[in-house]
Image 1 (cartoon, one colour):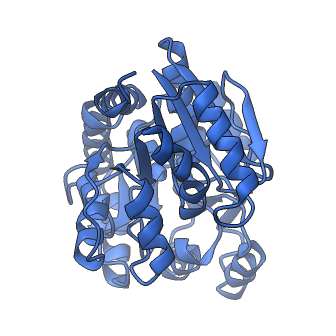
Image 2: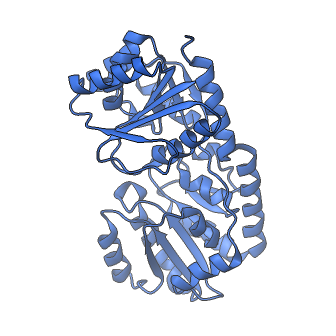
Length: 360
């Protein structure tokens, strides 16, 4: 197959993590893969050239000509894009050349039912959709009356990484974590929708009462200074460790004892799957597709995103019972291997692309 990925997104998100793994996998299997990103988009660690262009405004003629020439000259069989701006740039070429165009859905608000422009871009150009979980499809079907595009659900997957005790100990020492400390951890962008402030507020009660418990926050974002001020205000400054951006989120997951994701809304976040790949118990908001990954009380805990008591109670139950932590973690790792490995995701995406690719 000859596959083109067109992504406008300027900041690193889950879609980049997926594309990085998928592009390398497809390329290793002998497919011809092309990747076009915005000039300001993050650089992916991929084994092909990352072409960069300015997508410009919607239906920008320069972008239209560029994608038409690329799709025609390379005889592209299938195109995948993520946002309305991507679709408007590559969609006309797909329409004229009769190339299947897949929209990649990571959240239920990726399609806005109130935007007429979005409606016609999708209806005119998109032939298929891919979603990272069933919940996204269900919500879109409920709120978007015109949405009738066939959609394949293929879960996000990550590659497992085994870290040595020395690597984990080096990270603990770097973060000034003592041998007997229990680590509560979250790896996330420090922005409002991730609700890290809420996590600090809720866990302050636990942190103040437990001398050997630390909260590690791995990530950067616009709310970082505000979060540090909050930790100081709540008198847990010495208990909360801001680790900054990490290029190795799975190494952080490997040292966490209890993991968190407390967003008010999500699709199917990579963080959850990374925690599971490390065999760690997770307490997560019951939003988006998270319930398709975590079975409450079996391989993690689901809570209402505003239920402060439940978050504290679940944390305390895991802190007080080493056997429970181990059991939940083992079940999480088992579920990861059954459904959420990078290989499973890439193999299923390859089969999906094969099933819809243009027959030349």
